[in-house]
Amino acid sequence: MALRDFFLMLLVCLLWAAHTVVSKIVVTGMEIPPLFYAAVRYGIVAVLALPWLLPVPRPTWRILLVGFLMGGGGFALFFLGIKTASPSSAAVVTQLGLPITTLLSVAMLGERIYWKRGLGIGLTFVGGVLVMWNPSSGLPISGGLVLILGAAAAGSLAAVMMKQMEGVQPLRFQAWVGLASVAPLAILTAGLETDQIPRAMAGGWAFLAALLFSALIVSLIAHTIYYDLIGKYPANLIAPLTIMNPLITVVLGILVTGDQFDLRMALGTGIALCGVLIITVRRNHVMPLAALVWDRLR
Image (cartoon, rainbow, N blue to C red; front, side, top):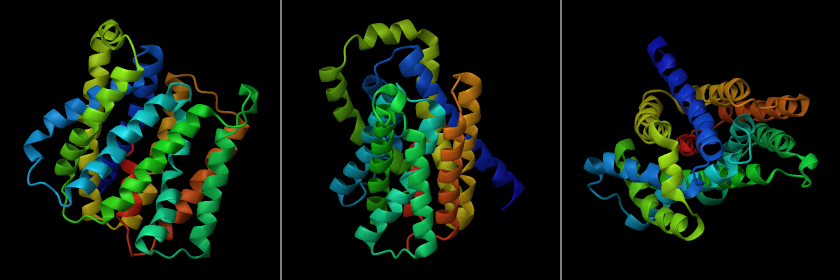
């Protein structure tokens, strides 16, 4: 890989990690309703990506479903979960999207799993459960991290479904993600949340900056760079580099939001990332892209 492209990949992982921390600050520190935050984010994405909306990818129902799962549906769960979960633990649990994608690819695309990848899947789930384990809260598993696991699963299903569509360019896909997400999220926030506008106004310029960072920098710029790199290099070269994302998130979480990173977290993170690394380096050539698309859940 060219040194320039490596630094681009590092930049993408840094932006993804920063977005997780910013999201935590928005829904917890600013107390912005999570569904409202997701709805406004994808409203901005839909408007900015509107010039790339046509021609319509076929079949239309599939791009709408994939767009909602990858966008508004997944992020609604993510923003709800990050309200009570720490950014560092959320970043580790999100890694479970890769083994979920792999398992779904077996069921939906006929991919085969051999013992080494099976071992990687097992390690990733063990590490993820260890990170999610939180008996001190009264429940054995963190509720916020369960929601984030649901977000990862939604992104995984969308990743496999997207593999069944050919020729959808990144910006066109982002346009349809925005379009498919706005209306459902608007309905959900109107029905389930209150005081959206007063809280947004109280957030002021900081909230506006977070919105623009999420919609413009992360959704449109970072993801476009990422998919350009996927098209330029083999998937088994790009995928291991995405492990930089949770590592950077852990560091930012400790420094910015004061995340607790004890022995249990360190052990769970290490086991999960070892599993992810095994899965990525053992990936076969049947569907390299679908197993990477889950990384768009940022």
